[in-house]
Length: 364
Image (cartoon, rainbow, N blue to C red):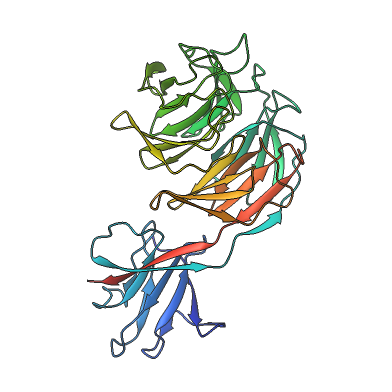
């Protein structure tokens, strides 16, 4: 499938729209596939004109229906290995992180859980209504409600696998619970109880497995693994540092990044789900944050806007949210991050558009 493209010819500081065909005098084009995914094309002089298309799901660019000539420059959203291309060592940041407001959440919540399925973000539970399911449509900027959760479980965590959302753990006496929300049928069911009941956990899905980290009981370092296909539990290698509450987790590839917590606050622990092993990243994440992943960066909100580069193992700061506040929920759709509720404004829907980082490659 080919995306419909918008072509922007770049001058010094201005942008002028160009057509889908271009002449050899036009040497640099920003290409947007309509979902905020950009590529930059530079065509060597004398290579002729042609029509550029961007294949779905790739950073590759074709030229005139064939291959780009050797020496042409394109961009990828990361500086990893890309077959047929050589990284130039140059990175460019386009734009800056900006915030806008979405439609307010009907029920004010702090400490809610959230998961994204398609273009909808599901905000579940919280201190305002511990069983509520509030569904945000990112396309229509509107809210609807889903069937209430069967059992109230503040302090639980959730993760999506396919069209199901798994709510795991919660306060005594419901610390073992696995509640499963089917987003297609708007209905709830239960899964096999977690072997060691936990509260204030963080959960993340890789493939069909959900990894649950930490617990509300000493030593706080458990890793419990739920197989959603078999509806069964296993265990992983314990964390370097156990966390009682306040941690958050993010998935990139087969690695899970566990940030912060009440014990050591700023620690970054990285779990390799393939090797069942842990490493430590550069510290810098406060407790009580929510996070989302775009490209190879993890964005954390709730103690300002902090950005962790998984490739550089380093931190930068972004534009702070207008209202801010810890214990918010969040989701990401089409490169926009949606942050809901929190301690400062429980009804808030705040939308973050991050700066775009592009890495220049030449065609071999």
